[in-house]
Amino acid sequence: MNGKLSGRTAVITGASKGIGKAIALALAAEGARIALVSRDRPLLNGVVAEIAAAGGQAYAFPADVTSETEVRAVERGIVAEFGKVSILVNNAGINIRKAITEFTLEEWRLVMDTNVNAAFLMCRSFVPHMTGQGYGRILNMTSTMSWVSLPGRGAYSTSKAALLGITRTLALELAGERITANGISAGPIGTEMNRPLMEDAERNAQFLANVPLARWGKVEEVGQLALYLCSEDAGFITGTDILIDGGWCAR
Image 1 (cartoon, one colour):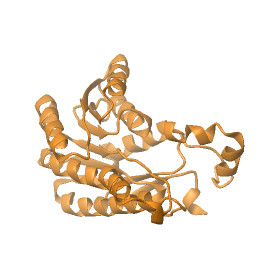
Image 2 (tube, helix red, strand yellow):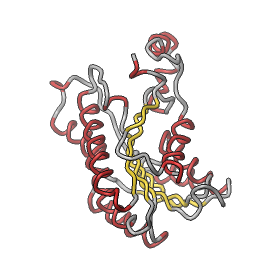
Image 3 (spheres, one colour):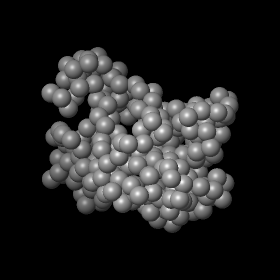
Image 4 (tube, helix red, strand yellow):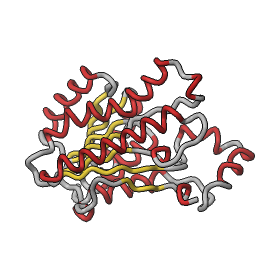
């Protein structure tokens, strides 16, 4: 399949559903070969089939990206299949909602492991396979919660702010290789995780009253933003974070 990303290989974590899947579909539609990483093999296989049906190329690599051993195994598998890697999207993440004083240390560490340490492990494994090409893209899915916060989002906000710090450092360290690193801070997006709220008419109306555009964002809109940031057209954008939040943070 020819397109803006023809000949490029993209590694995407949390790729079995939601925003990760949308990014995978968007990049595949422009010719990128996709390495899909997630713990859920059946869902990954479904995304592989969807990409293949559209004429694209994708492979599933089931793994827990919080595990150093499993990330190294995924690295070996992807490099054996594709060789060089051009794009890395760190999308895997979780959110545990409760007051900071109610967190157990185990819960706090789980959020940090999934949202921060996994991105570190993936970067450590795959950045060496991105160098020497004069092109590379790292996208870290940060969040509006790296800019603002809400009660009950202590661990999540902390982890996403840390991910933003990693993004800026990567941009500086890799500029000489022409590898860019950027964050995408998605706000209220209509993912599976938000479906219960969206289907509760009263709560949904109360929530959207705080969104200037008065609607939920679409995962496809995030996918198209990711596609742009991975394209040659975005080669002068690095070390920053782009909000896609319907105006949430402008209030």
